Length: 146
Image (cartoon, rainbow, N blue to C red):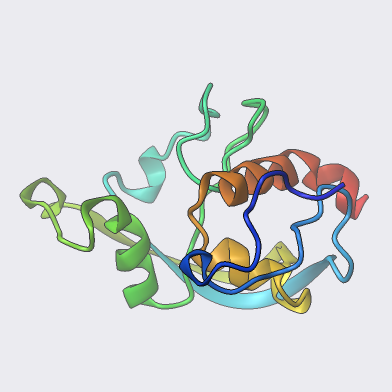
């Protein structure tokens, strides 16, 4: 099953990609890799809440509210860009006391980079239909890699 409703072929819509799959994307694998990842957070790591949102707030949140996902970037610049995306890249004064979080070590992860088209869409796509597909993939992740 593909994602619904994306107009195709118009220059105003950007590149035309194949539909995002709702079922298991080809090439999706669970892998263990050594990473150095970053987040810019309002609270220190020791105070993070892992309670799921009732309604998705970010693109990788569960649509059902079954679990919490925290996105981390591979660079400090990426982490800052992700944190301040909603403000158009401007850092509000209220973010002045935020914390740089560095996550290192071996991490189990779903590697979307191995699937041509999915990573590009999810990494840069903030359209409603792409976000909806991300939410569904998050909820289905345990079954997809099982």
